[in-house]
Image (cartoon, rainbow, N blue to C red; front, side):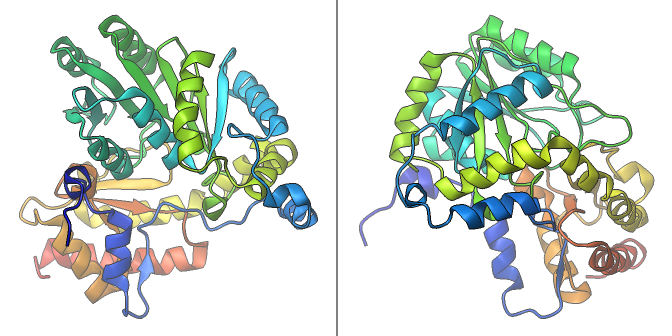
Length: 385
């Protein structure tokens, strides 16, 4: 067989695909692994899709950067909800493709990127595929990106791009606006880009507030997948600080998807203009019991082991010190207790687990959480796997 790309060979295997392979053939395993929500898009949005399905434009290419009416709606949303004005927008096939566009537009093989651990595994993979050098930034005791440590990394030179996921996948921690602004300022001084993934912007709890920052060196990414239950419809978007950067990114857009699927954009537009943030907020408030139940399932590990998350759809917890192989523990939980979670190794922090709480309706979430609690209790008390 001819050789494969060294860059792709050096890229981590996709964590979710590995979990799916692990579960293949197993019966009665409940998943608290994949970061999805259990609800469908708003009814009016699905009705808009049904009405549009026979329109000729749905089967045609559209504008590379998105339907004009959707772009205008997104610019209005960005101004009203995120205080981001004078930005340029590209609609993408999900936030992952948005991030890939950004990586290809900003990075060279000789450039460096900074990710804060724990990080979103697909962010790492996208950067690995470019052959870029990746530096791992540290978080403070509250799991917020440490700006003093970032300053040190930036001082070494050649950093082109700093990535913050806010709220964080996988820790579920919201980064305050003051920290984001500090990151933007440090990056500007060092001649680096700040890229913020706002996929979970509507998912905040306990009084936490999600906010954005802008600037000539700041790119913000967004997604319809989680908030509007549009995982399979694949719609995200990028807010660029200038037309120049957008025009360069259009090279990636035209080469990869050409445009996001027209029908999906119609669903996104109807979700934005019809249901909007209020519809999502009701769904998020409905996650309170799921969130509490999953958190309670982690208590065998001890309160100090559970991150005080206030955003996204995840709990992040540290496993016992004498059980460092989180991958084997995840396999054991699935095999012996019928519940699946994500190993922290996939997010750059071995010895931890990520547990999703929005992917199952309440009754199934209760059962999955009970299984998880039993497994963790056995792990802590007996040390048996």
